[in-house]
Amino acid sequence: MMMGDTVDIVSSDIDLPEFQGDPVDIASKKCITAYEAVQGPVIVEDTGLCFNAFGGLPGPYIKWFLQNLQPLGLYKMLAAFEDKCAYAQCIFAYFDGATMTEPILFDGRCNGRIVAPAGEAYFGWDPIFKPDGYDETFSQMERTEKLKISHRGKAFTLLKEHLANL
Image (tube, rainbow, N blue to C red; front, side, top):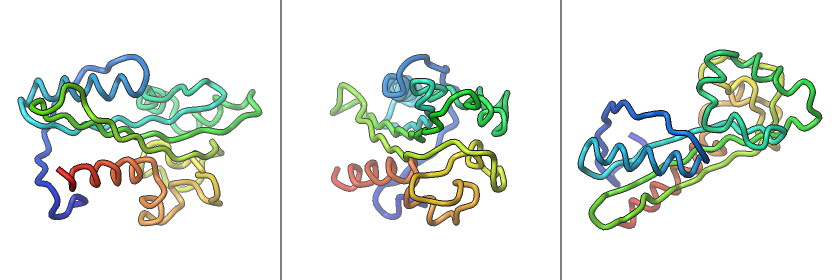
């Protein structure tokens, strides 16, 4: 388990609504809704892929874009734009409901570019995202290297540090 001996975590499969809005607001709303469902401390995750040319979209709606367009279609969406820059964003939200009035958010980002698909499509849009400073897409990278630099790895590190200090 990634948390090690820091905190015991129990996974729950909760069907949360698909909130609309800013990624920060979406993560907060998801966290409060999850808390209401389990009546105990919760951690939720929301991940997005944000194209600079589109003002941050598809962002938190990437799941639906990917489902309908696949990685190649996402890449083609930027064909008419010079700016192929993007960032991957992961927000973990934590709420205990007892000592807090609002969730605490842990925002991890990885800047990069959208490129033609390369590598196996093991995880969503990894074949089209090439992080800044690297010659490979997330799909082509070794998993351990990806975890060190990824949006999820960065957000998780922040969350883990917070939980270790509770």
